[in-house]
Structures are given as structure tokens and as C-alpha cells.
Amino acid sequence: MAFSELLDQVGGLGRFQVLQMVALVVPIMWLTTQSMMENFSAAVPSHRCWVPLLDNSTAQAGVPGALGPKDLLTVSIPPGPNHEPHRCRRFRQPQWQLLDPNGTATNWSEAATEPCVDGWVYDRSTFTSTIVAKWDLVCDSHALKPMAQSIYLSGILVGAAVFGQVSDRFGRRLVLTWNYLQMAVSVMEWTSTRARALVMTLNSLGFSFGQVLMATVAYGVRDWALLQLVVSAPFFLCFVYSWWLAESARWLLIKGKLEQGLRELQKVAAINGKRAAEDTLTAEALLSAMREELSASQAPASPAALLCTPGLGLRTCVSTLCWFAFGFTFYGLALDLQALGSDIFLLQVLIGVVDIPAKIGTLLLLNRLGRRSTQVASLVLAGLCVLANMLVPHELGALRSSLAVLGLGGLGAAFTCISIYTGELFPTVLRMTAVGLGQMAARAGAILGPLVRLLGAHGRSLPLLVYGAVPVLSGLAALLLPETQSLPLPDTVQDVQNQAVMKATHSPPGRTVLKSTHF
Picture 1 (cartoon, rainbow, N blue to C red):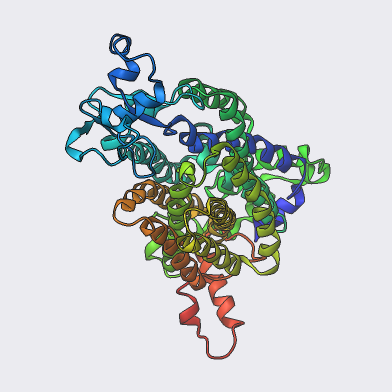
Picture 2: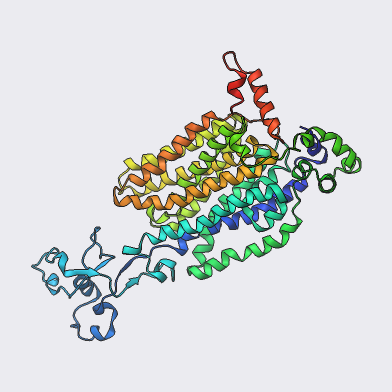
């Protein structure tokens, strides 16, 4: 492709690309803290009903001095499912008979209990304040917590739906200044084909480091409001330096903005030390090199082309399904760390630590097995780890946590792969729209993911069955996608169709051009 040759002249992997990547990884890390923060700001502390004998000084004055807090708890709160004090019910009147050494623990009736009509008392030894404790999102209101998570992710869904198309029309940098969800593709379009997977993988490691960063910050800040402030303030700095980021020259040239594209390419050549390219780049040279692409892009490419154009429809459906599977299972599991183990700080760190080798391994597999095989393997293996947890007894908490962390690591690898794969499957004129659609599907999955946990009321293993089956089926569907390893980024819809024709031409006997052009 002509632009690939231009990029090689100014430097496809040099000082500029390194600076650009660092400038984008920093907000990715803090963006991850926003996504994972509810594990801590919305943590559910141990709690029980408020009862007069324990929590009212006037009532305590009439209690015999020989009775301690444990005895008062016994006569005030019935035992729960795990033989611990019940979290959602209390006795209407103190059950003094339960202190009789000759009595039994079951010497009371359900009719003697009532809901926590006077509120709850929360354990504040781990967190001084959470939104669950502030608004009493427990017991009959426990479903409001996953609903709150879904509402937050709905906002990101709107952003993914809108800003993908906006950036295709108005440019990457302007949109990036206000929306960092599109940042990964901005790196891709400034990187040569040889280094594309490397840069995208390093970029996605920002999410891994963000997981560890989240655990570190939350460990030091135990108040939910202060935690929200700490993880949000760095975005002011990101906003300031985002104006330095270069606009995609590929997008500028495809849109016919040759002078702006020339300035950006000359800027990159200067930063990368390519003085010869900086002197030889002219508007006439760019016009000549991009003549075919500019001519092909005169017909406007609408978002409907993703589904209606032969060569793009199947790619759109399958890649969107892979994005959905990632968001659905990852956020369904990762936003409920308390269900995976007691030490959520350690679990959050482990998720980030395991994610790092998973993504580095993905880079090696992308270059050896190709995009399609890596995508299939990462999704299927992640789903199998989740499904395996259905067979593990709840008493084996360490094993269950390990399988869950490994499954999340597989989903991290799947995310790295689909981020690279989607950018290579679609032409420049529709790339950001396709990525926006994929992110919209991922956020739609993320919205549904937390709500699936409510199915646990009908069967303890039912949420795991759903979380595991979706990535397995999506991974198998990815077998329908074409391989894009070592292929140049397509600039136009015609380039995609040409690649399909070339693949069919070199395919083994028995495969036809018509079948290939439907990829």
C-alpha cells in the first residue's frame, strides 16, 4: 500500500511512535482504575441488623453485666445460612432462651424474626466507607449494586457507539482529547505493519498495569469518595498533553487533506531523525503516491457498509461477537472479586500480574500462529477455565480463585488479539467505526455481565455456565474470519475485496473466489 511505503520513509517504529505510545498508555492505566474501582468503592462489608441491645446505649443499660457482646448478639440476631449472624434478619424480641446451656440453637421460629427495619451495622475494619454502606445496597436492595455497575457501563456504551463514527468524520486527535476509548487505534495507524502487533500489545499492557495500580491505590485509600477523586484527577493532565498527539496522517490523506497530512508526516520524520524523508516529502509526492486510494475513497463509506458490503458483513458480525464475549465474561467476573476470594486487593493484583505474561504470550502467538488461531484459542481456553469452576467445590477457594484468574488472563489475551485483529480486518475509512461498534458490543456485554450474577438465586453454578459458554461459542465463531497476519492495513473497501480475491486466487483447489469474497 502507498501509505505503508510513506510510513517506512518517515519511520514506522521510532522515537515518535514510542512517545505516542507512552502518552497513551498513561491514561489507559487510569481508565482501567475507573472500570475496576467498584470492586472497592462498592465492596460489600460484613453487616448485620441494627438491634437495641447492641447499638442503643439506653437499652444496653438494662442488660445484666454478666452478658457480653457475643451473648447479646446470640439473643438478637438469628444464625444465617453459614451459621454466622444473619445479615438480613433480626429477632423481634430478644430470645433469652438461646443462652440456656441445656437449650438448642434451633429453639426459635422464623415467625420470631423480622427484616432490618432500623437499618444495618457495617464492619468498617477494611473500608471506612463504601457506596453499599452509604445507601444500604444489601439484602432486598442487593440487586441495585449490579444495576449501578450496568448504568456506569451504559455511559461507556454510548461513548463507544458515538465517538467511533465521530472520529471517522472529524479526526482521531480531536475525539481522543475528549474520549480515550479510541486511543489504541491512533497508535496503530502510525505504526508500520511489521511492528503493529508489538505496539498494540504494549499499549494493551496499560490495562494490566492499571489493574495493579487500582489495587495499590485502593489499599491506601479506603473511603469511596476520596478514592473516586484520586483516580479521576490524573485525567486533567492527560487532557492537557493530548493536544500534542498527532492526527492520523493516514486518515488525513484518505480524506483528501493533503497539506495537513504532509505536515504530520514531516513532523514524524523530524522526530524520528529521518532528515532525508523530511526534505523530499511534498504535496505532489503524496498526491502521486495516494492517487489510487484517494480516487477509491471519493465515494463516501457509511457505517451501513460494515454489514451490507460483500467482504465486510461476516467480519463485522463475528468480530463484534468476539468483542461482546470479552466484555460480557470479563466484567461479569472482574467486577465481583468478593465472590472469588476474601482478599480482593491480592486478587486485583493477581489479575493484573497474570494479564502481563498472557498478553506477551499473545504477541508471540500472533506472529507464529496468526491472528485467527490466537483469537480462537484465547476465547475458548478462557471459557473452559470458567466452566471448570462449576466442578470445583466451594470449599476449595484457592483453586476456584486460580481458575478464575487464569480465565480472566485468557480474556485479557483475547482483548489484545481482537484489538489488533479488528484494526486489520477493516479499511481506514471504516476502521474507527468498526472499532466503535466492537467497543459498543463489549460494553453491551459488560452491562449484561454483572446482571447475570442475579441468576445465582436459581442455581449457584448457573452464572458460571453462562459466563463460560459465551466465550467458547464466540471463539469457535472466530474460525470464520480470514487471516490477516503480515498483510498491510487496507485503506478502502476495495482493498478488502482485493485481498479476498488474492486469497481465493492462491487458495487450495476446491475453494472458490465467491466463497472467499464473503469474508
